[in-house]
Amino acid sequence: DAKTTQPPSMDCAEGRAANLPCNHSTISGNEYVYWYRQIHSQGPQYIIHGLKNNETNEMASLIITEDRKSSTLILPHATLRDTAVYYCIVRVVGGSSNTGKLIFGQGTTLQVKP
Amino acid sequence: ETGVTQTPRHLVMGMTNKKSLKCEQHLGHNAMYWYKQSAKKPLELMFVYNFKEQTENNSVPSRFSPECPNSSHLFLHLHTLQPEDSALYLCASSLSLFRLVDYNEQFFGPGTRLTVL
Image (cartoon, rainbow over the protein chains, first blue to last red):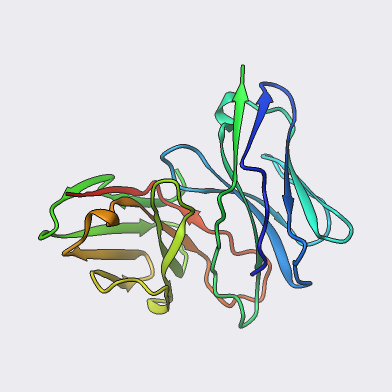
């Protein structure tokens, strides 16, 4: 699976949009971009995933660049409860090469401040 | 609530003890996973099971012994652990492996905080 690069930490004011970047310059054509987050002392929580089109769900939006070498997770109105470590992961999905493996990096620690 | 439960939530054990961690999922999934999260380190995949068969052992020492009696339950048997094995142990489940669809998110349990004295 491709390696990702994320800033180690970011701050965001409560109520403002949080934009978390991720670089995945070696991503392959059959690899998806996944985002998970881990609130302190809890298990990771799935947020969103995408292949090449922008995606939106009730939690966040995912913007993937046209060349797919980077992406941004957007939390439109951050709250204090969004303070967590956010992980960007790229992985193959489907077919015989899908081992289910999620390779977690260090992620970005997002601190939402009042 | 993610539909994945883990017991106990906290465990303190000596190096000569034998204990087991339990994971149960109520999501109808067929793939289950054990991860280890040590302090200041990323999550590390330990084992993967698909339809009760182990498909991956990520070079885990034999003092950790997994068991998957059915698709809903996963155990991690612990014996003669070392203090450096102290960590948060996370269980996860997903629909199954090798699916020809683009949707296979993993649902994680809350974890068991293990301390080895």
